[in-house]
Amino acid sequence: MTNINKERLINYFLDLVKISSPSWKEGRVVEYIVNVLKDIKADIIKYKCGESNNLLVRLYGNVPWTPILFSAHTDTVTPCENIKPVVTKTKILSDGTTILGADDKAAIAAFLEAISQIKENNLQHGPIEFLFTCAEEIGLYGIKEFDLSLLNAKYAFVFDGGGEIGKVILKAPYQTTFNLIIKGKAAHAGIAPEKGVSAIRIASEIITKIPHGRIDHETTVNVGLISGGKATNIVAEETSIALEARSISREKLKSIEKKIENIANSIVDKNKAKIKIYKKLEYSGYAIKENDRIVRILNDALRKIQIKPVYESSGGGSDTNVINRSGIKAVNLSIGMRDVHTKKEYINIKDLVNGSKLVLSIIESV
Ligand SMILES: [Zn+2]
Image (cartoon, rainbow, N blue to C red; front, top):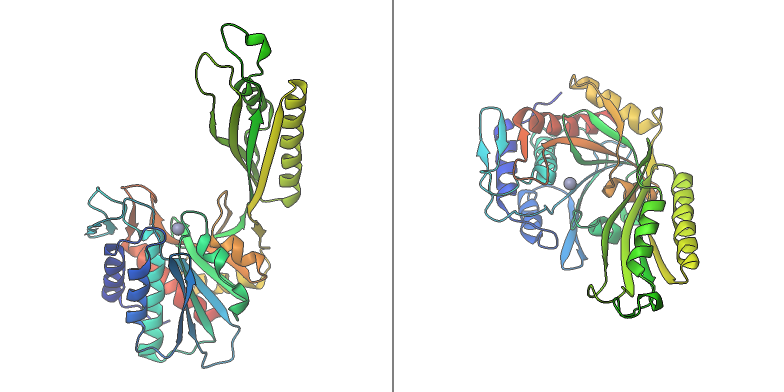
């Protein structure tokens, strides 16, 4: 097992987090990666995506092993201007005024260190692709725009999970969003309330009647937005509700969707109002079986670095969902980030190091 260069890894990480890269403004992170890899024998290709770019780095193998993919996103949530990382004996955190950006720059740093090791030590490896996606945080835009048929990989390792190294997400949900626009009838609230049909009342009834919260261990529903009405003296003519439903099971999701539509339609009919229902599958879910080859590769890779695998399912979506949809088996792995999307975000140096070791170990275990 090759060791990693801890000092160089930390420097990659610190350089990366100091580059501000909110969604659609990842350009300087992409330039940084390209610059670090400029002497590496690899295809480095930028693919335009919105106002930004996805970046694909392709290393040709020196042995004919199964092609694999590593993936991470280059954008972060905000506030991410002037991040001043603080390095203590055991961890790296921000100065408290911004996020840190370990989500997902810890993964980028781990990949860069692994590639540096391959080059320095002339390590044996099969074909490896590294995909750096943009605009993940605001709706997986980078990966959704990327033509996944360009990839040769059979298995994909997305490093975009929180917690200790060794945590692997084998299942993640499908997600559907709904926009319900309810149309009632306006009337003067004091003079002729009986002539009106309140869209707000109908919306309230729908919200209280549909399934909500945790439905079962793999299914959830949430109404997240409501707006409507003009003034207290007008019976509200229009109200819109935005909600989402998620389930690891496509069938359960479909049945919840039907339920929501049926309940909404029948309440609207009863009140002689109208409704427009807009529904969108945001991303597909996935469920990898524990006897799948990708899990065997991970078991081997983790054993070699003496880390115990912890297989879990997640309630959230990531680039992993989209990659699985294309037929490439993909899992989402922890890269050690903690308290992400807050100013308290940090990463333990031990996890940063183990993350990079895991990348190398996977490369050796294919
Ligand atoms: Zn992330």
